[in-house]
Amino acid sequence: MERDKRWTRREMQKFQNLGTTNYFELDKKEQLDLLLQDLFISLWNGERGEANVRVPGASVDYKAMTMGGIFPLMVAAGCANSSGVTSATLKEVFEALAFQTDYKAEGGVRFIMAQNVLLYELSKVWKEAGVRYSPDSRIGDLNLYEYKIGDMRFVPVAIELFKELSCFPADFKNRIFVLDLDTLTPVCMTGYQPIETGETNMKGQGGSILDFKEWWIQGMLSLKFNNPLSSFYIDTTGIAS
Image (cartoon, rainbow, N blue to C red; front, top):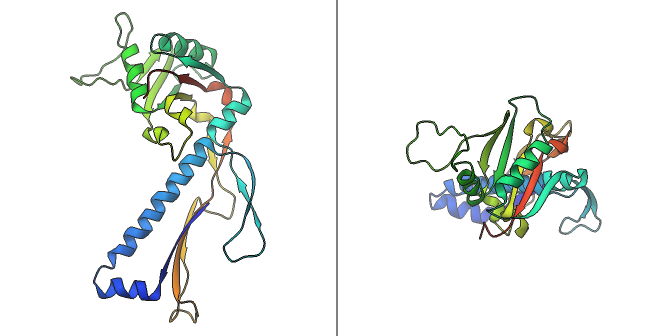
């Protein structure tokens, strides 16, 4: 995947004359932030396959490979899941799925990933009377850092981007993922770097006849999911707005 930004020689000279040359660095940072967002979305919800890409001005397409993200790979592998889960049934469903997917060694950690409101609902579940938990010594903190069920351990991680409809389908804002990160390995093709940056020459630089400079940043990312069955997901209803 790639992000590009083009600046003409006149535009760049204008900002330099105004003494605002840091604008270019801010622009590069924005492109990096956008690429990292692209990588994150693909990591979670990318569809494995092949796409035709045509560069503006070109007459032919070239092939681009797309990665399979965490959620589509979980669905394809038949990972344990439950839907229509409410606040009243969340504890029971979570425990059942946790034991059903307990393939880790004793004391192994899995990570609960969801938007904040869902993690807060879980924290209330595990603070009910008769449920053991470790509140540390932090007074007034309503969130737990770790849940313990039998010899299993779970650590919550908030991902607010799940509720951004421009990035993810609407279902993601209501979904709780529980992942065994030891089975997930990001990979990159040999000869590439996960993130690479560069820029083109323009007039007056290296003999170029182009009257513009382009900054580019590209990403190369894919994913190995060795044992999806030690992870699960829950689709809630009536909890997140």
